[in-house]
View 1 (cartoon, rainbow, N blue to C red):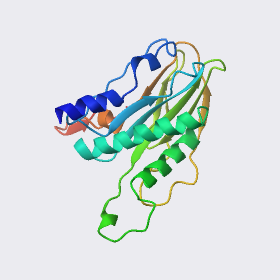
View 2: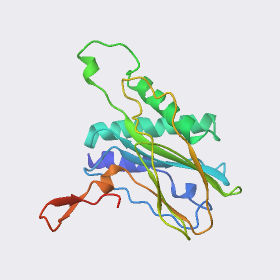
View 3: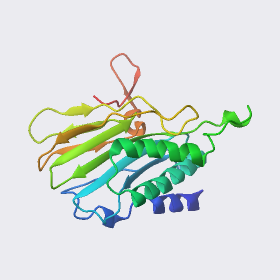
View 4: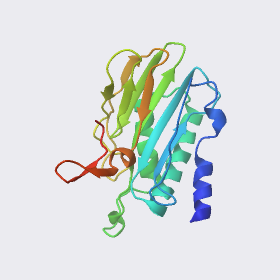
Length: 211
């Protein structure tokens, strides 16, 4: 398992994929177990002025989650290797299709095999630095926008899962916004916001939450 953790970390983006793309960037990746189903990904450096960042939360924890995360990471490399400028919404749909095919969940199977039903939540953000625009599409993973001037905004994702046995979503909503230098954006899986913290005044445990 410890060695598997090294292999999973090796699947995360290399530092050079972040160079010359952000004024500042921070990543916190810490599986609940030694390995897990969360991953983050950024498109290859062949395109500097338009690139895509995504966060994926695969079902399950530990070994099952990590196996799904590897399939998702490989699928992302294939999707963007053939179509670097693909829109976030279309990329989400293609990721869903890739997971269903990779897990044979697009096939009619016997009842025992049908017990397997796995997939992921994800958010894709395409940044166009020349145009000063950002395109966002998500499946159960929201985007937090913290403009340098103005109130914090939460861009809500569609309430759909990706890769599961049920049919792929027909379409996913895409939102476009204009950003300024100094604006900040935040993506997280539920592993962060669902963390249980201190008791509140009613002596109940409270999740960290979005607020």
